[in-house]
Length: 103
Image (cartoon, rainbow, N blue to C red; front, side, top):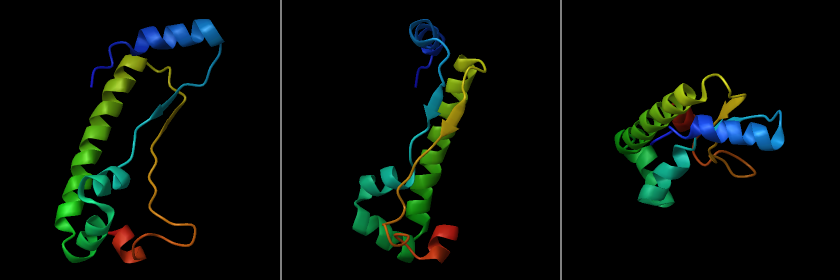
């Protein structure tokens, strides 16, 4: 991903809005991973063949880390918060066994 425009965009934000809080949203790993395979298959594989879904999430993590590194390099200390999101639970519990989540 090309982040060369980040300094210019941050300048424009500051000019337009003054003192603003700059956040960088990294993305998600679990959601993107199950979307690639289908939720049911992904969750079943987490239980029966965890190597494949874990590999997918590890690769997504590498992409997110590299994108974050590139963004921060261009932002030059002008970022207030970095966060990621993932929906791994329902309103009642995790979508997987706690042991699977810990692994």
